[in-house]
Length: 399
Image (cartoon, rainbow, N blue to C red; front, side, top):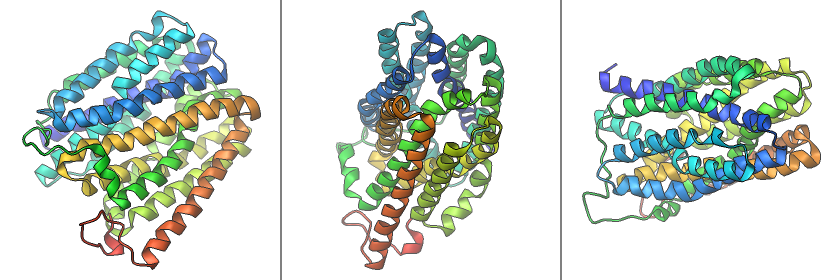
């Protein structure tokens, strides 16, 4: 592997190590501080509310900046510094403010790093994004085990470890080849909302959005649900290892899958796996049985994220590469997480987490039926799903 792509590989290893530390264990930290499920849902839900504002703003800044790299470095630095502010107080209002600041910087990182990586690969004409992204899978798995053991006694170390990981990511990102903001070199300014003219893209974003709502509830409340059933932090870490490593088969085969299967089928397949997973969650009572069930994660999150990243990279014009990725991040990491966290927190107190996972099963199932009909309707009537002015594609190559 060429040296410059090695920097990308290790960047994904460490950035998803940070995701394992923060994303998995922050609900347990809030519970450790003494908050109720509705308060935890509010904390985890209002942060993404800021992401709704942050994603389009940072996407526009990135496309209009002299280089996207500078924006990525700023986001990483802001995320690491704001993480260190968490343990200064356990007051609810204080943490509410901090999580909003943190999310403002943190939420666009994944979308922007994907945009930079994909553009780099396009310029080189070689390289497999899925294999580079696999570094994140292994990084997440390793850190889930390591911090799962640490969290049993010192969950308060979450933020210091996370900040160190971000510092490593900063150093690695400094070695990325320069990727310019394509609107900076000319006077052609294109607002993000141009993306909504592409009907195919809108359909894919919509289906992904609904599935991400159910994932939003999972990320916010699965650690609490697992603990409620009797699992401890170490077991939680191992469950995350299983969910992370289950992504490997898709990442290894994704290039072939994208050549042979339409994105609409791939998204619906991920939705079917999500529906099955939430149904099993609602019926399992022994935390040990949660571990094999976590293997379904490899058919859901990674499939949705990599498929959408590739579709956006191919569908949007050069001037909106970063904006397209951050729009998807706005919907999946912003609005969907808000609904999953806030509504999920309220519903959990009213009906219990087990019942809410069953409701997520119903939501995913309905989404599959509705979007399967929509995709079939367009194909059967030979309507183009492309944006106006683009050539109609054959159904077998709509990726």
